[in-house]
Amino acid sequence: MALTKDHIISEVFERTQLPKSRSREVVETTLEIIKNSLADSDDLLISGFGKFLVKDKRARRGRNPQTKADMKLRARKVVVFKTSGVLRKHLNGEEDLSEQQ
Image 1: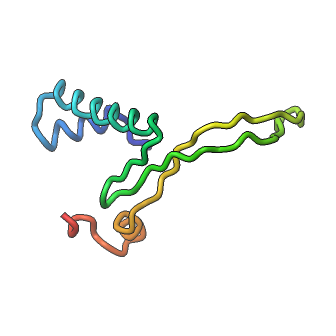
Image 2: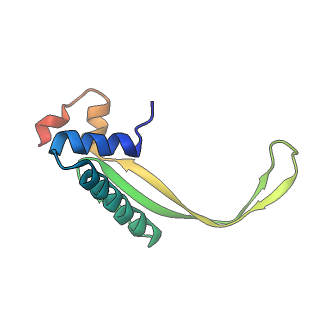
């Protein structure tokens, strides 16, 4: 099951006891800050979690897998995520994240 924005809002509400409307506002504001930062091509570093990097992809030749027709893929920006060492160790069961706090 995927973690949804509503689930994050509910977790913030339960853990902080902020009113549900305030929890929604906090999550929405945080996500808006993240989106604006990435849209400005700024990297985003969250200590103990990872780094979101904005990369430029060049235009390239591609192929439609259904029709096998050649096509030109335009240049674009993509977001890449690199995990921190702390998160990587936690995912591999090597370390408990609660020890870091």
